[in-house]
Amino acid sequence: MAKSARYYQGCNEALLLAVPAEAGTILEVGCGEGILGGRLKAANPKATVFGIEREPEVAVRARQRLDQVFTIDVQKEDPPLETSSLDCILFGDVLEHLIEPGEVLLRYRKFLKPRGIVLCSIPNVQHHSIVQALVKGDFQYTPDGLLDATHLRFFTYSTIIKLLLDAGLAPSIISTIQAACPQPFLSALKPLLGHLGMDPARTAHYLSAYQYIVRGTPLPDFNTDFQEPEEDRPLSFVACVSNEATLEANLLRSPCLASDGPHELLLMRGCASAAEGLNRGIDRANNSVVVCLHQDVYLPRSWTRRFWRSYDQAREEFGRIGVLGVYGVRCQNGAVSRAGHVVDRDRLLEERDSLPAKVDTLDELLLALPKGSPLRFDPSLGFHFYGADICLTAQKMGLSVAVIDSLCYHNSPHVGLGPDFHDSARTFATKWSRRLPVATSCVLIQPGGRIEVI
Image (tube, rainbow, N blue to C red; front, side):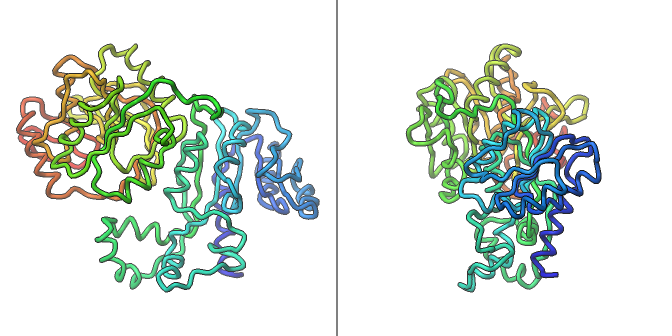
């Protein structure tokens, strides 16, 4: 068996295992001869499995295995199925062959039940074999594999996450098909990774991933009619910028920040501290709510709609708003609990608490506060703990600190806690010595200033 065929067979096995046993109605897009769908029916004879296959002669063979096969072009047509009728939609090695895969996902989303799922297998263009071909200047299409000549789109873990988010689906990478990166290649790459600020261990995982198996679950309150305005209440966004490439690839790609949108974006460069830039932005902002966020945050389609609804709900439940965010923690009697819903790097974090929820501190990836708030960030804390500090200050003033449900993507390359983090921690612990212990999303600061990674 050819190497690429072996990996694609592994994808089919992974998709088979990922389909919930209780799934009663399944659609396989690009079903081929119906082999995967046939195995799903064999595992659950009561299930109804539909297929889509563009080639009529192939669809004939698929009909022998599946309940019904539609011979349509998914880029142009939808199957004659009822809205909200499917438990699972499979896109096995399909999205990379489409001109507009995001639009197909968005159209087909309407067939999912509220608790249904989308499952995709996606080839990874960040695989070490592709990186090596690019470095050698020998990038060329092949009959199959990662550079299959019929591929129209190329994906990494971050591009597929953004794709699903923009289709109103909460994405989660549930498994990978591995073709390990050789250790000599990794060793030679380390200086470049250091230059780019990338973690070697994490990057080794991405370089070894031949394919990703990704699950998407429907987000409630997602606006699928983009002919209508997303939200008529404008927001002011403020970000400190230290890396133009990171900014361009993430925050500036957010649909709500398109040049013709109603929102205000204030970018602060050359800041000595996070507080310097963020405070300056708050003072200059023209809208009623200011969203302070990292340059590596991506805000997907319909984000402002979900933000405003969650903001209004938090204000109704908790009264005067101090600071709102998308992820936070509480520390009660030494026990730390988390609240939030965010995609962090390649992981979907979805804690158990219903939202909005009150917390002690918020993750600094996104902090929103009313324009008229008396709160300001503390410059003495540098680029860490300024979020925890403003949350504690808000509570001291009788203002609410809460996590709201407005899913976004934090595409941070950073791993670990550097010396500047510990310097900020000592400053924070001294300032709030009478309030300790205090938990943030990554550490617990005990009385006396001792730091525990959580």
